[in-house]
Length: 470
Image (cartoon, rainbow, N blue to C red):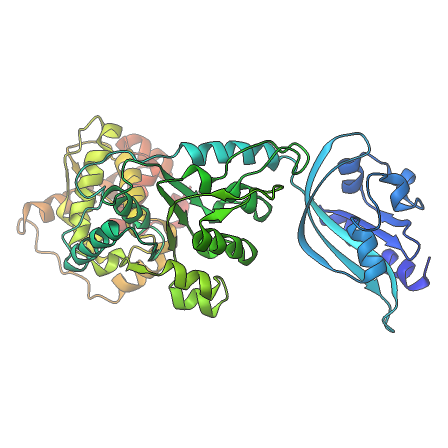
């Protein structure tokens, strides 16, 4: 073994053992010089069996042309995030993603090769389930505007534009921040277009491991790789209808090229097959980034963007359409009313004001989640009188509120009913805390969850001594 290679293994061996990946190193003769515990678990060889053995003796199914380690050693090739399927010597199917690099001395001479692998075997069965789920996704009638609730002029204009695009049956790119309702517009495009009675299939590109993109989109044929069966991908499942690709900026550029050809030619081939499959699909895509940003950051091919961007819908964030917040809040109150037995029928004026002041970084989705969580912790009465905002947004909200001048409460006996009740509630809280050793005891005496009590203390500006925080 080359002295430099031996020194490098001695230097980095502890690191390789600690990173939780399969790491194998071969020397200039193609013999294993390093083989860690993760490799042993994956291929069921012990380190003693592997070290010093020639690679092709351990893996007789391989040869110099299809062994990435030997290609790196002999040809100087590099592989990054390369997906590989094979059977280990015990006959077990292995799916892995690996990076393989030649190891070179300072003078450029290759003295070995290293391969770092991540086991994806557990993902393979999930892939089949994923395809089945994607094929089963269909439009469910929701009436009206497909769940789009708005009283905002810009949103109404956007809906009008979407309806015109729907009838034109063209490809459409929808972009906007996370949680703004891009999928609702995709469903509107499908439902009000000529393909409404055909499948509506959804694929979230951000939810897929990179090695599964191609087979999920285009399908597979039996024998394409170990365990592969004849199976349609989501593109074929959407034949005659609409395929909605969410988070298109997560789709690998290599797959984007094949998708572009499918859109241009109306044909594609399944993984492992040379036969052309003809398909008629309308593709609608969505991104949480603007088209220009995707281009600037090379997350989308320009030719694919131009093909998809025949129609473009830019969905505004919730903070730019404040008129929609009361409508959405009431709609979510009705939708999730069962968590309180439909006891809570309205939202207090103070809570609604807080909703209108908040900046909603997660948009409509965040509003729904916050409202649901607040309903779950609402103890009594027919009015939602507090709002549990997510901590990630609290800092900005608190800073904004701190900049506002404090409101001067009216003297006792004066003010609105809400102001008088707030003063009474504050006195009750202070009296209870004075007789309790900690917050847990106070919450128990008041019949409140601890989180609700903490919110009310913050709402009334009650500062606690350190000894009461337990």
